[in-house]
Image: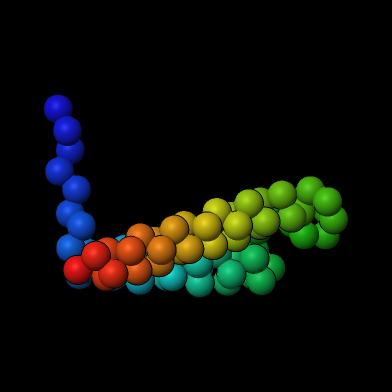
Length: 74
């Protein structure tokens, strides 16, 4: 059974805005002194920051490209 995917421009804009909010929160988490692993432990301290920041940046880029592609097709 296939899932029905909502590809409307409004839905894709909401997804893109959500991804930007998540990226902003990841940036705040990276800058924040409160961490799962303290940044004072130099190599290990960034092991929780960098993947979260990269993951949200990739997700924001993907949702942006998906939105632009749908806008061109409409």
